[in-house]
Image (tube, rainbow, N blue to C red; front, side):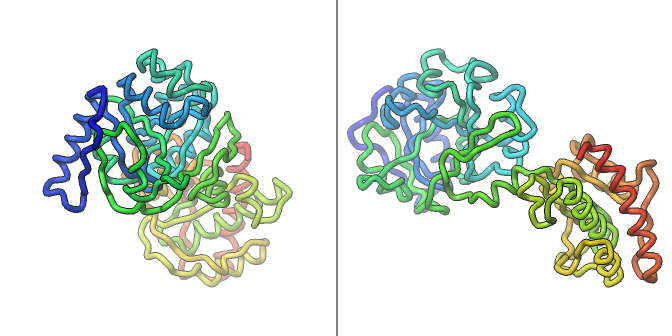
Length: 376
């Protein structure tokens, strides 16, 4: 299918009897060299198979041959990013695993000469990567993810633009784009704006195109996350979180509220708790005496996503560490006990203020060693 008919087939997904059949039809169309109009969670776009040179050439024509920006490759998920960007920096991996699937496009300059980019047909590489940069995204839209699961290579996509120059947020905005073989109507896009495009070079990033993800959220995703873990998230781990913020702010010479802007996010959670409980009263008192605050603390249950997103996981006991590794075994390289010699930090729950003071002193001393060990 090197050329489409004058009128593309249009399928309303809401009216489809079997969405799986539509997925297979879309995959077949792409495999035959067709262009497919479809929706991501941000905007409607026009997609082609990365293995079809003629289709990619038509896609580049839609985007504009004088446009130096790369076409975007849609991946199944963050685990694929290192295959396209060998030598991926810690920041690049951090953003991919936290932002995807979702509305962020990551751009890696000068990445077209290594990794899986070299496995694409030679004729498509200059069309997809005209300036040498590789643009990657893993979309969250369920239907497009179903298509990606059945493809042997990524989709190449460019955003649609309506007749008035606005980005395509409804299927009708694709009406003036010629050369499509199939259009999939998935209703108005959920977010209604373009993805945020972020260029990543080593341990630095910059926003090259603003979009639905704002700067503060991006800063949080790019930061180093330290997660402290105990049982109920009302005593030990909140104290560790608050005291770690105090120590980090002292080392960095900044206010606690500025830690995220300096690249650090300090959190805590419990392996067996209910969400929304305040910190223990004595914990609040002893932390306040050391310059921290638990006034607005609310407990939260540890989840697998929290585990995967953290750069460092620090538990109070060996049982907590074991429970952590049972949930997400691959987190082992990033998980450790707070106690430098592998002992447990006893739970002060229900004890008097003096016990909480002793616990806070121990936690503070262990945190100094932890931050030294981590080079922070």
